[in-house]
Length: 290
Image (tube, rainbow, N blue to C red; front, top):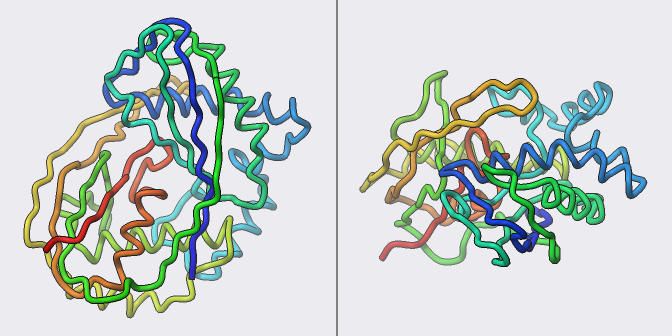
């Protein structure tokens, strides 16, 4: 059982000094991309790519929802977009004139990676200006590769892991924000997201007993929790409204029978978990603890 995605990396050079505000890089890039991707898709003769990724028609939404086959996460409203940005390394940085920088995009719809449309959109984004001051940059190159992640249990016994919440992570349980990431909540949210993305854009829902999976996760406990709230907000270029997109960051150690869960934790580095994943939230990293 696998999960697949296309990993893009876009390389730029700053024509003018480019400043990315603290916690703002993903939002700035996402906003500019949304405005210019439609034009780029039309330019390369693939206007349907924009609708597929940003605005699926009602018929397509119904068809996609039907593909979930009863595996939709509870509380799922809008269909998750088939991409996320990775730009947190640019937060709070100023890129000097002539200096290189990059950011990544993970695309979960592998049917047609639309390389030309994505490349064209980011070339236009750079020309229009990036960062707080809309400073100009130049797209120098773009690369992409297919990433195949195995979701099969790790060989050998894994009984302790450390999870680092690298970007703000916000999850809900029973209608309330999670203040302590109990393992069952965390792994269930990851499982739901991976299965939903796979059902909508990939090979189909996970062939998994969701209830039994959650019951086994109950045996994993927290042995160390060092997290802190990281406030952040984004401003919608469409409505002008400001929305909170913060969450907790830090490290948590878990102990228990973890072999079957580690592949899902590793997948969340690519997919994110929780809310606001498109902007780069919910990135986690995992390592074994001896």
